[in-house]
Length: 212
Image (cartoon, rainbow, N blue to C red; front, side, top):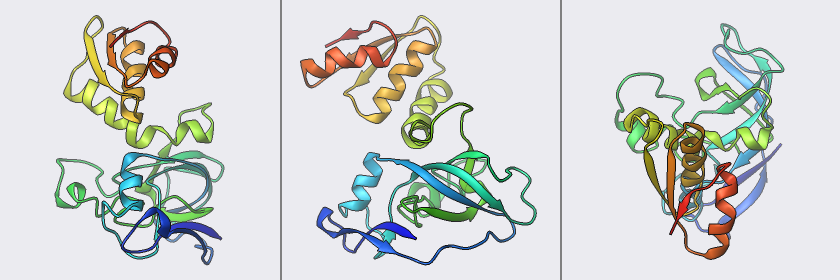
């Protein structure tokens, strides 16, 4: 199968497509997923350009969405045919953060091989169900940027309708935050680097916003 990897010590001139053996059937507690889409985040860029060091030949991309093809013994969470999306911290299933979370040691596309492959076999914790009715490209965008925005706004920020949120720029997290804020009945004040972005972004949130 084809994989997209980065060679040590990193750099955009050290990226390439590499043929690897198919990962085969899943073992106990594992799932086999056909990857249909990935999304590019700043974390992926840092790994690719060497800003976050990783092993030679690391398969890139933290976020991936696809279809379950097979499940291993003991897996009850998924069945073949289910649409799934990857998790950014598959080794962090509950509780407070710990060392391997802070250093991305278990994050796909950084500490372990990522989703830039036609097929992957991973522990069941590496995936969760994709939103019903979402396309694979759309689902692939929610793991890193979407969850970061949700955590900041809803979990840590306890966002309420009628409040105002300031978003900075037009990156993935800001775009996700803009849409979440509007959906929750709050207001957005956004900063942009160009008039073109200022004209386009309000449509992403489904309504008007205050922009500078």
